[in-house]
Amino acid sequence: ACSLVLAVPAAAAPGQCSMTGQGDFPCDVTVDGGGITFALPSGETFVFAHEADGEGLAYLIAAEPQPGRYPEELGRFVPVEGEAGCWFGAKDEITFCAALER
Image 1 (cartoon, one colour):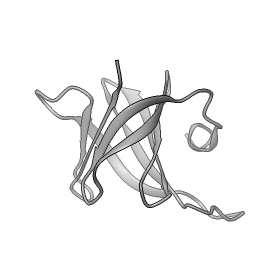
Image 2 (cartoon, helix red, strand yellow; image 1 turned 30 degrees about the vertical axis):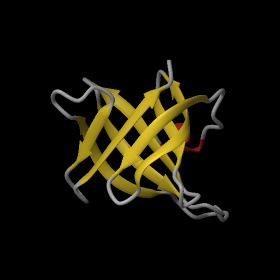
Image 3 (cartoon, one colour; image 1 turned 90 degrees about the horizontal axis):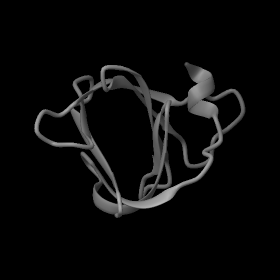
Image 4 (cartoon, one colour; image 1 turned 90 degrees about the vertical axis):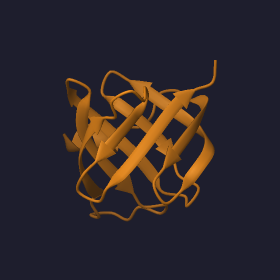
């Protein structure tokens, strides 16, 4: 699973993101079969690695990653019922949403 997290994003598209503690913000969203990646206003990178049934693990990569330093694991996230493009992680009670501009 770590190789997914460290993969270089192929192409990002403009979107709108939100996250608990970060509010709503414009973002460049990278979506591929393995998940979703976007930068936070703090400079960190948020990665959602999809596993199955819309659920997956989320990670936070430091703004200035250092060799040998692992991403911070945010735990398992599940889709938020009735809110397309939003997921909830019970570990730290974090909700994030990512939507591409149409």
